[in-house]
Amino acid sequence: MTDAHEPSPRPAGAVSDDFHVFDTTLRDGAQREGINLTVADKLTIARHLDEFGVGFIEGGWPGANPRDTEFFQRAREEIDFRHAQLVAFGATRKAGVRVEDDPQVAALLESQAPVITLVAKSHLGHVELALRTTPEENLAMVRDTVAYLRDRGRRVFLDCEHFFDGYALDAAYAKQVVRTASEAGADVVVLCDTNGGMLPAQVTAVVRTVLADTGARLGIHAQDDTGCAVANTLAAVDAGATHVQCTANGYGERVGNSNLFPVVAALELKYGRQVLPDGKLAETTRISHAIAEVVNLTPSTHQPYVGVSAFAHKAGLHASAIKIDPDLYQHIDPALVGNTMRMLVSDMAGRASIELKGKELGIDLSGDRELVGRVVERVKERELAGYTYEAADASFELLLRAELQRAEGGRPRSYFTVESWRAIVEDRPDGTHANEATVKLWAKGERIVATAEGNGPVNALDRALRVGLERIYPQLAHMELVDYKVRILEGALGTGSITRVLVSTSDGRGEWSTVGVAENVIAASWQALDDAYAYGLLRAAVIWCARQACGAALTAEMSKRSLTLSLTMTPPVSSAAFQVRPQSERRISALPSKPTRSAP
View (cartoon, rainbow, N blue to C red):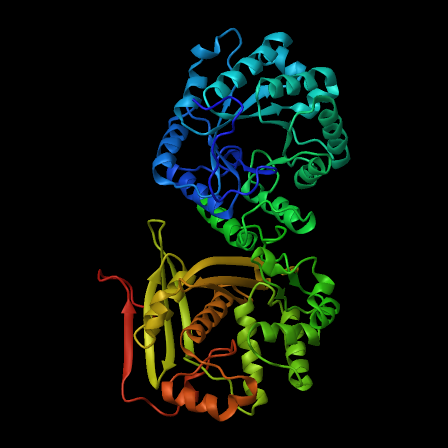
């Protein structure tokens, strides 16, 4: 048995015990509406958090449900923690029950977690109304359970539930709970803003007073109901707390908990306090997004430090300054947290925005004011018509490269040229619908007619385009549409309003977004799909030269590959424009083998 005054052994890779980063994503974070973690999910998240370098990972409440009990068993066998200690969560003994006889206390020991967090009442109203016991018995429950677990070699933290509200009701009793836990052997007593109603100045005042009056080591657990969870956490640190409880991406009940990633970034970059192992801060963005993927929630684009928009710049005035020195409009270097600066292209963009965006894409536009000016005007003209390039970088790059080709005296190149397309929706007597699309296009000198069915007209078009091109461009087999958004733009035309479609496509190595705008959703979708496939083939096959060397080198490369790239979203080309007939015309169909109506 470990001596009651000796903390449990910590992993060799853990940072100093002087300050704790305690993650409760697997317990408190899992209470968020819409999150339902399997044991496998919890194991995956635990690995991510350990890799990130947090000091403690609260895995759940063993004995409360079979899933958490299984998690602790499998975590012992399957995870070799390098930085974190696994923490089991539970409650103090029940009122009137000996601690040795309480089954949920026994379950905490059976989990074999080296650290245990106990939740206890520090709000006198909760003691009397929820627990239905006396203030004295509540203190005995805290004292007995902490001492019992300490005597069995566990490190113990105590969460004082509803502490700040309880402090407002009866400060003396709330502090007595803290004092009792500390004297019984709790290593940290955590002050919990369970209802999330506190503000930073209030947190600072209370934590400072409790620290002075009890001498206990204090921690903070903040909910985000006032939108101040991160600020409240840092306010507690300012007042002397040395243990912060957070969840990944701020997941949690109601509106969430204090967000792990901004808290850690602030402690390291603003406070100068190392709380993660060397080099781990740069993993912040990757870990944030990886955990979002596991819980099946889209990462917040505007989340501090890790959101894709956290270091995105739109206004031309900002871009002009950033061109001189990025630090003029950024509070940190994005690379410190594994993020990147992005330049957004919109009708607010000026020349500097376009130049910086070109640089981001690997295209040097410096010195060609005429070209940059044309691109600026083209963007403004297109956005006036309803396009948006802020969320469609791929479409913007195609537009930019098209203007680049024109500047060299050439025409925009294409992998394929669309002659025409059509989509048909058939309403059947039994109430079902059939969706069929036909695409006529030219690629590598061949005229291809492809027909396919889908679960909707846009899906049918997507399949027909893929069917027509995959034989010639096998790279398309790796591409798939991963997101599809439709927005009806403001106007008074009702069903005749302008429609904007954003499509996200992936090739397994990355994602890109394209945009289409038209008076109907199918035509807008087609434009976005056209751009998506063109950009995907650009990623997969085309080597673009630096602008100064584009001319002959690019022509030679394209000739060698027999490939061309579509750089604009042009209207369908009339078949009369094709004067030279190929030796053969291929007709391809992806329609089911069962009898079905032919496309007209």
